Length: 490
Image (cartoon, rainbow, N blue to C red):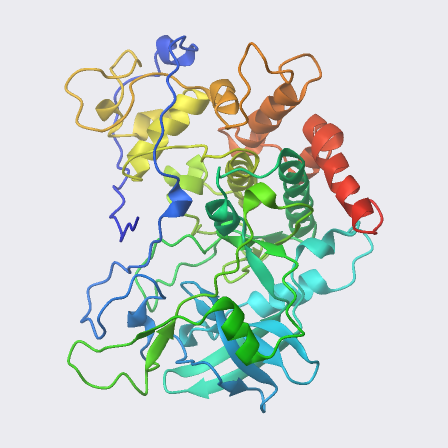
């Protein structure tokens, strides 16, 4: 199912009165709402007003970025860095780069070769990766959750000057792993271990002063583009353990198939030199979530990451469904607190089968309504500035049930209910979690701390490390995995 793009509705100032008491109380009527998961959509269209050069292809990167300032035209068999790296297949793409499976002829191993778009000549990604990879006595082994920068160099091509980063190869993202599964769920022990690894990883980033969120959004060369590859997001949590070093590039393509599609210009002219003659579909590495045991996770893609000391008030690039409410209301951003909110939304998805906040249209008003449905009323200053709240709520704060112009379920489904709806099969009558000291209550406390409306009151990464859920469930699962893999416990 493809979603090309949408124009987010702007949140403008308005005043509809104070938050009524009825909205502050917990509603008894709770109805789950099912919609297709957000990560099943591919957002691959730039909302920009410029002449189209190529016939579109939704299965590959945005071909319009094959122009001066954009992607480097790359094909199978290309070599880089004095012939050291030979392109064997494609791993993926994002708004800032294309990523290739390349054979390191010097070390006789496969690596991930990330070729940044030419407009990213000022990218700080390599600088951030060098910092995160540098020795740190206080890392507590958490550097393992960040991909190492193995090599870096630059190339010149028909579209400009491109930075190239070399890293270890991952099998796939957590999102793709779930999509390959039969039930969209990780095994419970696996989900707990992944949760621990993500919390440890984000804690390490913050301890080094790095916010994974976005500092810029391609506004200088492209207009703002909503894609799920920008920030602390499920597509950027990569599963490692893909080892095919014993295979030749030809054998790689035989085993995993090489699917290509011709690149065609609108005017019928040849696509070269600015575009390749064909586009390559990403390699299909099947790692189904429901059979995955002992995964090693790394947090990837630092193309929009930054040092908080250099930019304490950034503009986030995070997709709206994962964006903290202060960003949706154009309020002051506290970088680490914004990362924590996004991490929490992702943790829900890791531990369950569905997304935390659900909406039919994915515009900001729909998302805000479901966040309120989950967490209760926002701070008064935000409530007052939400001009379109009347499309969802009556003046007394109850769901609007007459004259509805939106598609939504006008019933309360608070955070506690959403924990039951994670897809683990438990019910209030049978679940053993919901007892004093049980996992469900520990999860509820964790999410309440992570998803505090006010960023100043949100838990920090250090708070997450000391949380009951982390100490009693997530971290022990990760430690058991480490022992099974022959390593020391974290």
